Length: 139
Image 1 (cartoon, rainbow, N blue to C red):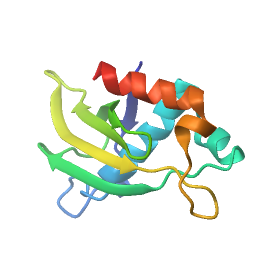
Image 2 (image 1 turned 180 degrees about the horizontal axis):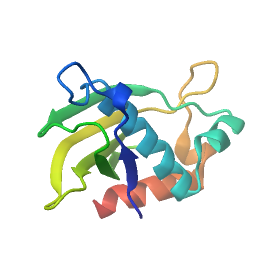
Image 3 (image 1 turned 120 degrees about the vertical axis):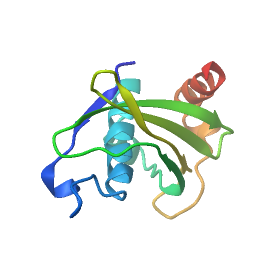
């Protein structure tokens, strides 16, 4: 699956000229939304089906800084899915010569109805369930 590419905007940098650490979480969301679209399960479709997917945890390791106008390639994968909790992985690489990994991380998600009840993904969305389990097994 093609990675997502983000170009660092000037407003994402801090007074020292480096990307502020909080912006990487936003980049992860951009890449995750793109990933879900590529899988054929865009968030708009999920919401139409009455499914929400909040973030329940985030874990990041900052390896190297990025600055204004850097291009960052973000590879997204499924680390695990047990039917309730989905763990997504991210590897961010600055596109330079040679390419440099700048961040690795994970986000954890669950699936809820608008009333905040857990969705039984295996029962209610069997195609989506099979896809996530298959992706987790590949990693």
